[in-house]
Image 1 (cartoon, helix red, strand yellow):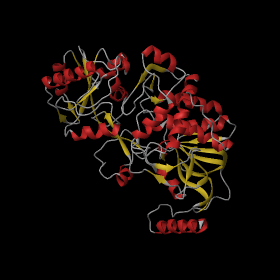
Image 2 (tube, one colour):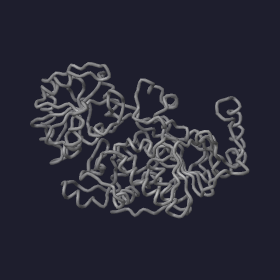
Image 3 (spheres, rainbow, N blue to C red):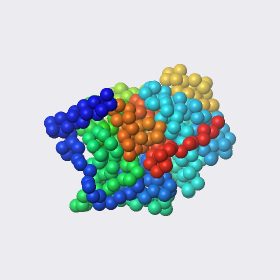
Image 4 (cartoon, rainbow, N blue to C red):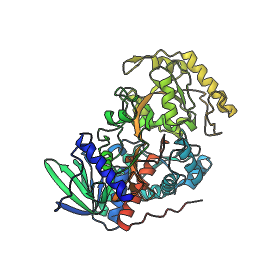
Length: 515
C-alpha cells in the first residue's frame, strides 16, 4: 500500500509539473558529480539557521550556511528583540527586584496553545518551551545584554517576556553570528537556493541543493542533512493572498523582501507536507506611514501590563490591550478609522521602554508628547498618517484615560476585561503624556512545512523525509492560528538547535524542565 501511495504521489506531481503548475519541470535528477560537499547544508541565516549551523559545526560537522540576502539575519535583524521564556539565569533576581510572580513551564505551554486556538501541536510547543531558557542562557553566557524587565504582553498570562538591550533581534543575531564563525561555519551571502535534490521523485533521501551565486550555479552535497530555515512568506503578496485572499496588496508588511516563501515551495516539490497555511498574522502596532516594525513599534506590544491604553482616532478605547495580536489587529480595523494610538504617561514607561528610546522617537516624530491629554489630542490631530487626517477630541481622550484609571485602582476592567496587575499596571495621573501612532501590518505566517519534535520534515503521509530538517517560520503546526508575540525567537532558535544536533548525532538534545 505504501508503495502504491508513493507511485500515485509521483504521478500526481509529474502531471502537475506537465501542466505548468509547478516550475522547473518537476523532478531533477541529482548530479553524478557534486561541486562541493559538506556534512550539513543550512539554508537561511536568521535565528533558526544560525542556531542550527552553529550547533552542527560545534559538534564537528563541516557546515555551510547559505542566505540569499547580502546580510546575515533576514527578518531576525528587524525583530523586536522580545523573547518569551518561563525562566532564565536572570529570573530569580529579576522577579524579586520587579515584584513579579514567577512563571512556570506549564503556564507558558498552555498560554501558547490557547493563543493559537488549540491548533498548535502540543508536543512541538512543549519542545521549544522547554528549550527556551537553555538558549536564552546560552546567549547571556556569550555576551547578550538584556534590559532588567520582564513583561506580560498580549495573550500571555505570565511575566515571561525579556527584551534585549537595544530592543532589536540584531542583538541576538550578532552573538549567534560570532558563535557560528568561531565554530567554523562557512557563511555565504547573496547565494540563492533554487532546488533541493532527492534520490527519486517523492522518495529516498534528500542529497543536497542547487544554489546560484552571481552567475555561477553550484551543486552542494549534504552528507548528513539539509536544514531549511528560510522563513515565512509574509513578504510575497501573491503567495499570502493565495491562502488569505482578504490580505491584499494594500496591506503593508513588516517583512524584508527575502521573505518570499520560495524555500517552503521547494520543499513541497520534494514531498514536504504543509500545515496551517491560511493562518497569517498582522502586527497591530506597526508604523502607520509605512508598515515597518521599528523599535518604537515594540512599545505598544510590551506595554499592556504596565498600563498602556489603545485608543481609536476619536480617543476611545476599542479593545482589551492584553489581548492577542490577531484580536488587536481586527479590532483596530473594525474601528473604521485610521490609525489607532497607544497612550501612556511619564511615570509608567520604565517597565516597557527607556528614556533614550523615547527621546530618539520624539526627535523623529514617531512619538508625540504633551503635558496634558487635551494637548496630546491636539498634537495627534496636527499630524497626518499616510495622508489621513485625524480629529481627536481632547475631552474624549481625557474621559477615556480617567475611566481606565478607575479600572486600574479598582483592579477590574469592566469595559474590556484586561488583566490588572496590582503594583505593575499603573494609572496615568499626570503628564507628560505620550502617543504612538500604530496600524496592522502583515508580520508572521504561521503555516509552513510540517515537522516532528526532532525538526524532521514530514511528507503528506506523516513519514519523515530522510535528510531534510526545518526550523523557524518556514515550519507550521507550532503556533496554530496565532503566534503570541515573543514566542518567535525561542521557537526558531530552539528548533534550530534541535535540527543541528539531529543532523549530526541523530538525536535531539534533552532540555531539562525547571520546576
